[in-house]
Image (cartoon, rainbow, N blue to C red; front, side, top):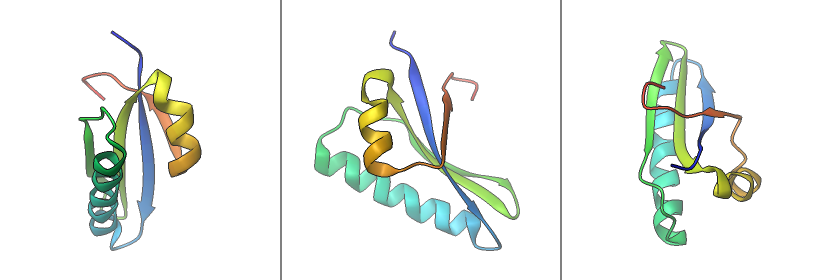
Length: 81
């Protein structure tokens, strides 16, 4: 199995969770329009003032998508992440 990278967008403030949820919608639209083989997306609250939106990509797509989508950070993905 190829190494997978979780590309993450951080949102802070009282509306962070709603913003992260909305970001995931845009990420799914991008995936659909570009016909990308990405099936793992999501958003979640880190705490009440910090939330994230994310996609999980194979290592071979990471640099291309990083440059296009400008995530705030990334990390190695595992099922427990």
